[in-house]
Length: 228
Ligand code: URA
View 1: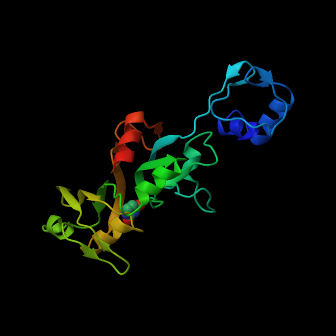
View 2: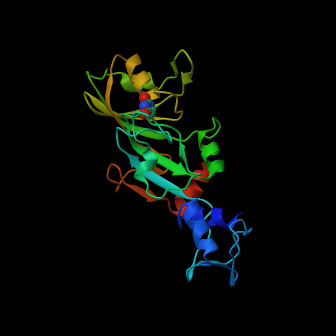
View 3: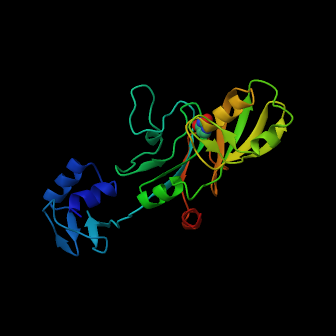
């Protein structure tokens, strides 16, 4: 890849800032000062900027505890993007799946396109657990209803795991991630969702993360996601 891209991907600066660093002779590749911005480097080359080695990290993985009011899109006219919550995020990063703007909770963000595709593909359903609050008393047979597939105009949901909390709140674990799926499932049993929090996405939980906080995934967590 080009030297300026390598450095920009590694957050050394914007593309124009790193170009200047290169042209001014601050950058060495394998012990040689390189002033050509499109000089080709690979991940094994030793790149040093102003005396500091800069290794190339191909993939980045973040778990964000998304707050309500942020949108799962890179840009929007009305709401700030969830990506604004992760400083210096690189350009090739993508949001895995979507949460509604008023939903909070676990959101995976990565530039690993292969994993992103795998997790969203129908063959590799990942359990998604939500804490749900509704506006009216949940039916006593909610667990039974949700344990059966539900018919919607555009799809049939897989059986879901319902866990009781009290009259108006519960946990539900679903596998697919259709548009407004949880809200639509509760509408079918006569309840409107008033608060939705994804507490778990596959093996990843929001435990220890304040709303709006993020952390990098561990190697083990990344491995487990691949094994799903
Ligand atoms: N289901 C919904 O209805 N909304 C979400 O944000 C996620 C799942």
